[in-house]
Length: 334
Ligand code: AHG
Ligand code: MN
Ligand code: MN
Image (tube, rainbow, N blue to C red):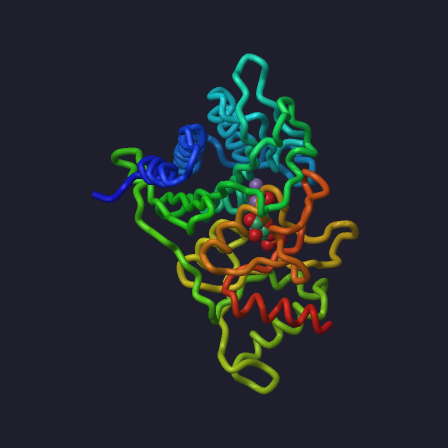
C-alpha cells in the first residue's frame, strides 16, 4: 500500500537531527484545513458557498464567500495547537497573532486560502497555497516585520489543488512530492513521488489581454513563441494555456513542463506585478526550484528578494529551466 502524507512526513523528519514532531503536528493541522476546504469547494452550490461576499480585501479585490470561509477554516485549524506564533493571509490586512488562550509555537504560517477564486463560480480548479517560516529567535510576539524573510528561508511550502481529484503537493527542501486525497478513507496518499519539471517545453501560460502593458523582453519572448516555426520565431511551435488559477498552472508545469508568466506590467501605477510574494510567489518558487525549475522576476531570483511589505506583489516568470533562462536572458540584453 502507498504511504499517506503524515507517514511520509514522519519518515522525512526522522532524517533530520533535532526534529521533535512539532513540524509534523503543524502539517497535520494544515492537511486538516485543506481537507475541510476540499469539502466546501466540492459541495459548492449545494451548501450555498458560491458567489460574492460583498466585501473587499486590502488589495481592493472583491472577496468571494469562499475567500472568507477558507480563510476562517485555515485560522481555526491552525491557531490552537501550539505550533505557530502568528499567521498572515492574503485575505487579512494585518498579521494574525495566536490568541492569548492558546500556547505559542516557533513557526510562522503564510497562506492564500483560495487561489484562483475567480474560477470558483464556474466550477474550474482552485487551490490553497501555504508557506512555513521560522519565527525569529527570541521573538514571542511577532510583528509583520518578522514575516519579511526572503523565500530562501522557507522550511516548507505546499499547495492543495481542488480539481477533478484533490491533491496536495509539498516540499521541505528535499524534492517535491504529490499526494492524492482518497475520499473513501480521508487520507492523502503518495501518488506522485519526486516530481520534476522537464528543462524544455513547448507550452507557455500568460494572460494575453495584458500584452500592451508588458516590457520589451516579455513582448519579444511571447511574440517568438506565437510565431513558432515561422520567420522571426523559434525552432519549434508552441501551445498556450491560461487557467487563471496559479495552483493549476504550476501543477500542470510540474506534470508536463511549461513556462508561466505574470510579468511586470504598467497597467496600474505602483503595482509591480499581480502575484503576492509571501502568499503565492515564494511558496510556488520553492516548489518549482525543488522540482528542477527556475523562478525569476525577469531580473532577480524570486526567493532572494527581501520582502518590503506583507502584501507586496512581484513579477513572476517560472517553470522549465531553459525557457525561463531565455526570458531572463532577454531582460539582461534589454
Ligand atoms: P487569487 O484568486 O488568490 O486572487 O489569485 C488569482 C491569481 C492567480 O491565481 C492567477 O494566476 C492570476 O491571479 C489570474 O489573474 P488574471 O485574472 O489577471 O488572469
Ligand atoms: Mn492567489
Ligand atoms: Mn486568493
